[in-house]
Image: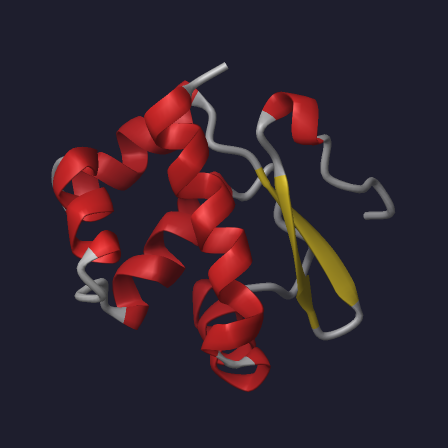
Amino acid sequence: MGDLANSVRGEESLRVGGEVLVLRPSFAALVAAEGELGPLFALVERAAEGKLGIGEMVGLFWHCLRECPEGVTRERLGEAVVEAGLAAVTPVLRGLLRQILAGK
């Protein structure tokens, strides 16, 4: 998966191991995320208040994956987020949340 994120489409990239995953907050992805995580406005509010759990963040990332390379599971994605640290993944989260609020 060599494609880079396309910021015009609201995509963000996240490195997991040697792979660069592209996250795209499409309508289908956001509906799936909302089905699991609850209303997106509440998710954005929790994030703004610093109350978004790591499981919620990983859930949003998981649902927004443009495509999932073989061998990357949700658990592996979660481990990669922890390995990278919150400082490294916060810009990705911020970009997705900005896209959810602003749309394109």
